[in-house]
Length: 450
Image 1: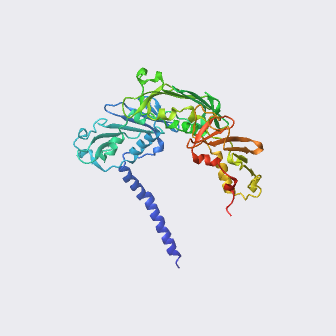
Image 2: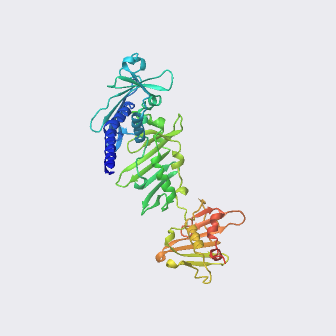
Image 3: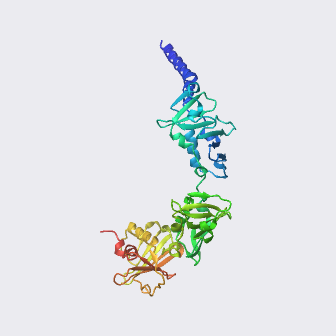
């Protein structure tokens, strides 16, 4: 009978599993622990203290899901830097150990007292303090660092990378983010500079200019401006009790941004003079708490926009799926009308025999809705640029007769360019020829090839 062989194999397998679980695993874990400075779960670290012989002590503590710098000042901590510090402590490779009995004396290795480099202390979320890590000198040859762990009877040798990894400054551990906000929370904002003041407000998901004129704002431009706010970072902080504001130029602000967020919270930024030391940047102030910092050099270029940049240059206001009717009137008389008929596609009531290509019509409709002027022409009127007698007029309508807009366009004589305007606002804009061609269409361009 072979059943006894099966039982024997099962018994051997069970015995092997028990041996691995009770003998080998503890041995392996013990050997791995011996190769680590400290064994801990990084998610349970609640406090880190870094003490240095000649520099201020640094303390960061976990507050809920976030890290906070507690010493030498109170501020939000840089989450990524704290995580990298914890990983550097947990994952550092111990290359070899030297029994203290065989060592020449702790001071030879820079490990006497709290060490010549750093004293690192970790506390877990249950209040347990892990054995302190003392970081000393570097080896005279090779790229190595001497380390001591309190309670262990040996000196440890680690890669040189650990020597620099535990040396931090308050700025290293401090969050560099100036605005911890979601751009989607911003309901109103204004930009003020020597060139003027522009005020904008979000209504039903769209941005509108309120000053110096009431007009639709360019949503893409405004969204880009707001999306860049979380990218404003400090290149340096100035925490003096009485800073030299005249030096910073904050009181003679070159540019100012004010934000109103959902829930009534306000934020703001004042940008002063260029800094004198590299890298290039601007003295700046966060308005909510008066924090002075050095901002990046792109601040003025990014936020020093003008009315032409902020104002919407699109000629039509509907979404593509809303469009029901397109009317094209041409100076040469080759006018036509396009009508969407539910799910059956497009027809041309003005040209009942035309076999329209649905893809071409949809592409033309999308091209019209995306059409925007390139730049405003200062002081221009429809009459001054020939738009009172346009070469092309396009009218787009939506569901229920909604007016999506009427655009007029002209090709100026010679090489004078191409111009468009919204028929309602009479605001003249220049456009390149390839955009003008979106309006300059014929019904023959929209039919299927034979």
